[in-house]
Length: 150
View 1 (tube, one colour):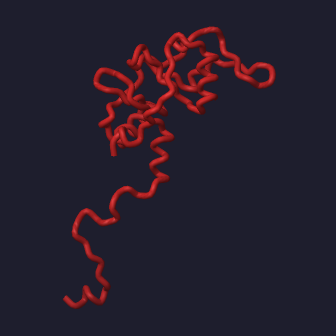
View 2 (cartoon, rainbow, N blue to C red):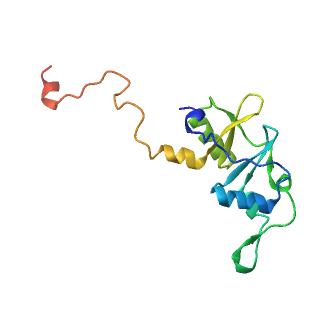
View 3 (cartoon, rainbow, N blue to C red):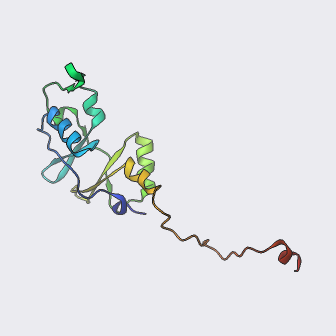
């Protein structure tokens, strides 16, 4: 299965000059944990909720407060990316090895076309099997009595 099958195609994105507080509010509003950061239509980085929470303080009332600064100050620059033709297994291995939870899916010139998250990959486990239950080789079950005949 390819990345193009599981990726989210409508992705909330931001630009590097967005404030940290505004980025957090966007994540909360759209219920996402990752925001690709674009410069034009090219991926410049990615911002995760963990990036923001590492900078946040709890204010009065338990709300997070962020220092002055922009997404450019907190984002991961040069994030791992993949083409839409990458296999799901390749994406999963990259996420495990790099300890990341999202991979922007890009064209060969780094134009964003989608995003695959660890949640997208876990979602695959909840879908009915997409593959045939037929074994890939000729195999027929026989009763023990049939095996003895011959």
